Length: 399
Image (cartoon, rainbow, N blue to C red; front, side, top):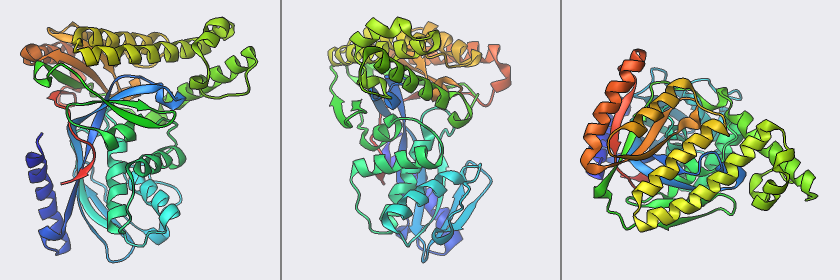
């Protein structure tokens, strides 16, 4: 979706907000925050591993204006419940619905900057809850809006940090910084290499024109919150594996696998119990796939890049042990479609979507075949599943 079309959708939200608040539409600001994909680097960001991210042209859009006092008033086009509270009285127990995201964003902003002005806004997500980091997307919208309303100038890495604090400290998700970093630094036509340990970002050039391939996004129709799945348990298991490897090798105590060398894992990994050995094996094999993926991307070898994506997915199933029967089957269907170079599932692997790269000339045929096969197997998600061809896009921005 072009910025022109985004602006048109944003203007529709602005007109609705103008009618509800009595202000002029020209006084209303519009934010667009894209969703992200992770072709390689599955489940290693919370362990300090390198990951590859890309922003796509599916977004969270919000039209907003500063409130006269500390009032937060928001309405979503996706959910029936409105949210309304004051910055001086942020709920101590965050809501179970979508309101908890603005509550957590307001909490971290008020704690650090003592903000006084709230926001009034209307927002919509194009594909919320699908495993493309819509939660980080909406958090970054709120953080940018609150900073703007209070005339606070923040650097990109400030937004990454604040988003991470909201997710980890207040929403209970023990993830890494892949999502918020991708959405903050994303560039159209680019693959982003994220060093999650330093942290740092680098744009990876490619020789293959994006017109030669397409990005497939297939939402399974099964959506699950990461905090209610085994996601946090997997993070704990990776940390436990790192701690035990450091003990076995005589290293000082560490809790992240990026602080363990591959040689130490090869020498002592067999002494871990089966579960922890698998988690560590996934980490070390995945960071190796990221390195190989960078070389494939730079040379324009989409067949090799796609093969690495599929290998990543197999390791997620076998070694990281996440996913569910529907998402496993969907990934197999995507991989078997004509022209597909490779695919893997997202959304923590416990629901969500499957991402695939496909030859441009066969993309429509592949998408149709995928939809027919998947809905035949899971007719209960007809009308809920989504089958899309998307493009890369720029990161979070004002329109």
